[in-house]
Structures are given as structure tokens and as C-alpha cells.
Image (tube, rainbow, N blue to C red; front, side):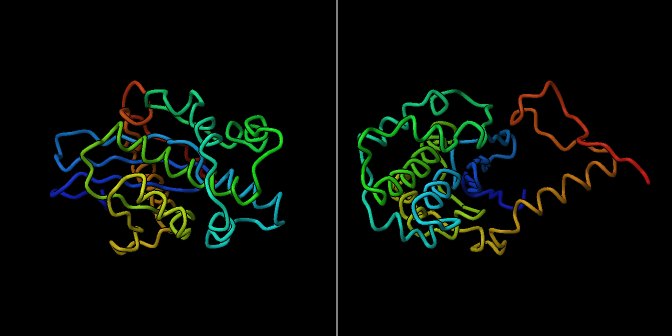
Length: 215
């Protein structure tokens, strides 16, 4: 793997709409694992659209103007998904604006406090996933849009109590990682090699992914 180290365990976190973690043990005999930790940017983006009319919280400024509401955060983290064992997967159909509205008390906290709480939810659910699945990981790398949110990155660092860096620190733009991964998967399919990890997907064995339909 591009990001694997022989010196320490690493966790790579892709923070798109949903956040997913890939756990890379330093010992090559140990399997790579990965799963969706929960919401990434999806709830933060939805709340920013509703409250500000903006597509997302630019540089985390909306969240920075508030403070996490601890009671609401505890309620959100009590969702069964977060305690379910991997392999597991979720999507924005589950962690949707309607899901959030069902959790909000009446009256709700201030809008900026809700945004700060959603940022904390993403950070703490990622941290919980890493600590449960690879507690000895020394390094955490972040890719995807969330890598550009300094408030989220700081919250993640605080939750993990260790340094959190963008994949740019290792020479890979955080916006390129997912595209590079799909290019690798496509190449595996073209040459007839499996592209899945059963430990990650829960499949019964290695599989060639997708299908090729010549024109």
C-alpha cells in the first residue's frame, strides 16, 4: 500500500460525505482492514446548506463560531451504528438530514453549536473506530475534503491525542487518493486480478470487481 509503513501502524481516514478508515499494520503478516466509521462531511454540509445557504462550512468557520453541545453529541454517538463491529458500511441515506432532525431537541441548540457538535461527531466517531480496531496506530493520515477543514482536523487530533496529518505530508494530494484507488481497482479488473480484501468487505473470498463490456 502507498501509505503502509514498516516502522509503525498507520490509519488512513478518507473524509468524504461518509468517513472510512483503512488500518495498515506495520507487520505485513497482519491483514489490512477497513470500514465506514460514520458521517464524514455529509451532516456538516447539510446543516451549512440549511442554515447558511452555503454548500459546505468553509474552513470550518461556522463550527469554530460555536461549541459542541455535549448532551446532543452523546445522543448522536449512541446510534447503534457506532458500536456495531466491522466489517460494516453506511451511507448518506442513513446519516441524512432527517436522521439529524430526529435527534435534535426542541428547542435546538444555536446553529453554530449544532455545527460544532456535528464536527465533533465526525471526529469522535473516527477516533473511536481507530481505537477499537487498531489501538496501537501511531500515525493518522487524512484524505478527502475533510482534510481541508482545520477545525475538524484539530478535533480529530484532540480526540486521538496524537498527530493527525493530511496525506499531502507523504506526497499525495488528499483530493487524489480516492481517484488513485479507483484507477488501481480498474487496472486490476482489466488484467483479471481480484481487487477486494475479504477482511474489509466481508466477502467469502477474493473477487474480480466490475465487468468489462467492449464496444
